[in-house]
Amino acid sequence: MSSDLVAQSRLKLGILLSGRGSNFLAIAESIRAGKLPGVEIAIVISNVAEAAGIAAAAQLGLPHAVLVSKGRKRAEHDADVAALLEAHGVDLVCLAGYMRLLSPEFVAAFPHRILNIHPSLLPAFPGLDAQQQAFDYGVKVTGCTVHFVDDELDHGAIVLQRSVPVLDDDDAHSLAARILAEEHIAYTEAIARVASGGYEVRGRRYVKAGNKGTREQGNK
Ligand code: GRF
Image (cartoon, rainbow, N blue to C red; front, side, top):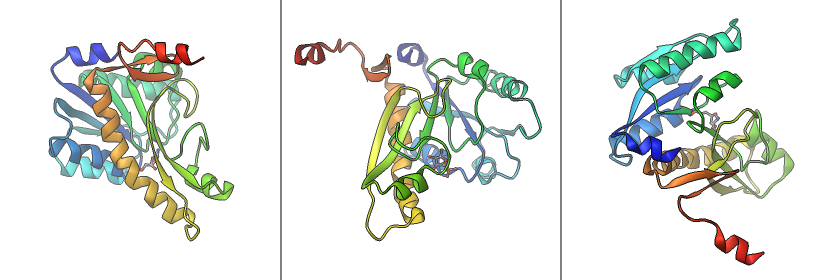
C-alpha cells in the first residue's frame, strides 16, 4: 500500500470532518510549517454545513465542500463523497472528527487509504465519548490512536498511539484537553509515516517494511 502512495510525487489528502476541526487545522499547520514535505490537502469535506472546520478551510483558501448527509441513505451520500475525493485525486482520506459511519463500499474504495483518529488507546473505549468512558472506568493512562479504517468501528490496523496520564484532579474535560494536544501531534506523525512509504500493513500490524519479524519468531 505505502509503496503505491510514495510512487507519486505528492501525497494528496482528503479531510472529512463534522465539527470544530482542530485536528484538520493541526495537519494544515504541519504542512505550512514544512513538517510534511510532499503532502498537500486536496480537499476538505464536511457533512455538516455549520461545522467550524469547514469555515476554517474556506478561510485558509483550501478547496472545500459541504455534502450534507442528514436524511440521506448512507451508501448514496458516501458515493458522492467518494466521487468528490476521486475528482480531487485524493490518495489518503483523513477522518478528523467525522461523525458518520462509513459504508462498506466507501471503505472498499480506499483500501488502507483511510485514517481515523480516536481519543483513547484502542481497543479500549471505542465509540462515542471515549474520554468520558476512560475517566469513568478509572484508568490511570489513556491517550489517542491513529488507525486505518476497516469495516468495524474503531478497529483497523493501528498506525500509532500516544499516551497521557489521568491525574487525580482531572475531570473528563481536562482529560479530553490533554488527549487533544497529543492528537494534534499524532495525526501529523501518522501521515508522515504513511507518506514515507517505509511501512506496511501486516495483518493487524503496521510495521517497518522489509522487517520480516524474525525476532518475534525467535523469541517464541
Ligand atoms: C477528536 O477528539 C477526535 O479524536 C475524534 O473527534 C474529535 C474531533 O475533534 N474522532 P476536532 O474536530 O478535530 O477538533
